[in-house]
Length: 379
Image (tube, rainbow, N blue to C red):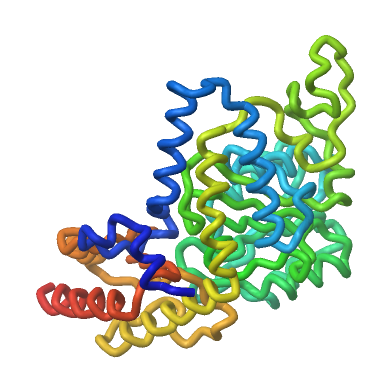
């Protein structure tokens, strides 16, 4: 993997911008913007009706996602966002009063509200308390009861960057007959994600963050066994087995996960996703993960050297991700100073969150740490 060549694909680098904010939204590469221009030309002066082009891009994107996630493309559906994907599970399952769901207190709301919305049906939600930004397996296991029907957790926690022991949680769910859901948006594209190893029934992701595509183009994997337990609550003309028999109103669902795609999709978003996935397929997710984790380890150590203690200082490599976060009593001032120096990061829950990708370099990290040292010495 030639990082120097890959870096030439991102115009923001030539502008002197250090972009460490992939956990919020990823930059578009030249190849993606070129494809988007091609798509717009087709819509404006070419065939205009680009449905066939969309179908080709959709098929190709699912095949690439299947390779990245180690699943069959037929088990992948497109969605507008992670919230709507998780809502398919929450609203489609049959619940009984007293059923329990295990979440935790560090989840992004997309992985909370769809399940809290079930309280009106008598479903109880148990929140595992985090320990120093970490969601520990033993703490999850303590909450499991005979009434636990589903566990949902982020592959990577959006504030701390902690990657839980997903395989252990998946094995626990398999043994107990519990549905296992994952919000994968902060992991897919940054770490090697093997759904078969996770024993996951469901995992949702989006293309706008680590995959560096457009907003409104998300996706999810659903196992056949979970699909069989779900009654789709929102259906449309493309949900059915014979969508082009327009006046034959036969509500026989498609066999695969695409039964959950109920109509017109975000075609331009899918087109961009299909193109950006080429980078991840060619670079290889194992290589990408190695660069991401190496950057995070280096970043954590460099911050410690200037007296800053990241949340995941001392964490094992298997629990790291692309997110490095630290607290500071004047976090807003630190954030503003970094922004003025053309260093892009984020503030989440009063903390500074830095999220470099695999193409970012140790030199960029060193520069950020040097600038941060100056800022902290000023405050």
